[in-house]
Length: 251
Image (cartoon, rainbow, N blue to C red):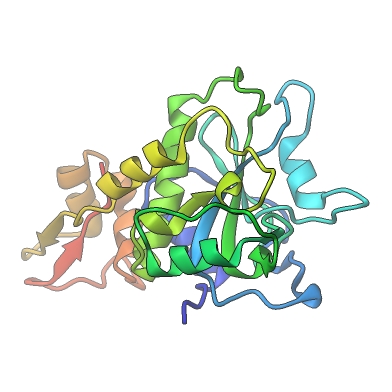
């Protein structure tokens, strides 16, 4: 059974992947848990918002929802600038009912997903959901920094749970009639995620090392020491000893 991490741990995992994370209001406690369970979780689902950054408050909409579909509408909103806005944690109205055969394929991490021709299974219970700011018309561009953020978010969650890239799907692969995300293929995104999930670089601590010095030497930025701490579950910046092996975040 895959149990979600605590909200604070979840945010730390994303930051350790090198993401710019914005915590919106009381996101840790904003959920739809009173409507049903969240978990066990089995995968990550990617959506587009059908909003225009110039005309809509995309983050606000995803946090509050609508009268007919209350928020949160996802766990995180990935805006075009590559930032991840955390708007809820727990059960969210993002996936709806989808195909049980697809869920079983995700759990088994099969290379090929079956057609999503049924809507008989509660996806809000089993998937992390990320809404990505895009009009969804096939013409609105996907900036590279936004695609990179989708890749990093997915990889961070997969790494935590021990999943492969095959645990990441699009809404269009889950629920009949859906087309999102439109503008890139989930196959191409899974290829990117697979590359990011390759074994992380490690570093063996030497006498006199600090997390700051390791980050400065190995990552080119001493300020990234917090990412090393989060990735290795270190409680304080001094919680290292000579000979200890540390996982390093991606450059």
